[in-house]
Image (tube, rainbow, N blue to C red; front, side, top):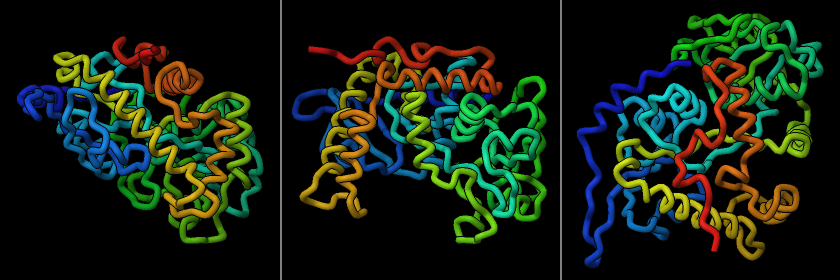
Length: 353
């Protein structure tokens, strides 16, 4: 997969972050673009300030963030698609530097859809079928294909992969692909996956966002896994993989001029996450509008550990290694990357006292 980020990287050089005075102390002023997650809430509202930094947070839809950051480098610090970040880093021309903070993580066993009358009952039966995808280079799709290949025996080269918008015609790949030998791939800009599945043109869909008919309760579409959460728990227990969808990155020239900001940001994100987890586990007050959320979070903590949403390399090594492996096998990168190559030395390990 090849991404041209040269325009955004060149354009970003014209704007340099400035130091401002706060009570006699100079602080670096940076913009931060991310989605409105509870585990970043205290960072977004200013209750937590990174050491030496004054943040101007912009809470935006992730699609808008990704486009504006990758295309124009509009923000100093930004949430970014993990697949696009991996590809750019592997190419060696990434206009950003990653820090091992992962705001979005989602298991993807629930992302595979079939017609209800399909005779396919197991992942192995997807071999030789036609599977629709919104984009080959989408992070969620990379995890789905890697999981199906390694854990369920799917031969990616046996499948006819059909790319189209999930619910609207006209969606295209955002990057130039370099598909592995043997992969059969075609685009259908004239249709959408929802309609092709209902009409029988394709046998299944692998997509993070559900097809419209399923979301509307149409009984003609079902998920491959009847109980995806149970399957995801087994997958976690077997592999230690908790899929990372997005990471946080800093414009390269900003980081290179001020490398200390990486550690400051990691510590601030950790503090915000810790407060978010404490809110989720609070049995006295309903901080999240779901019944039994504190009990469920306690159950997750027993399965995943005290910090069930970890940042850093070591705590996420099985997931990072798997995504690097999946990316190389699927042509997202020309070589297999190692987790340490994704992040600069300044943020690879936390300080221990």
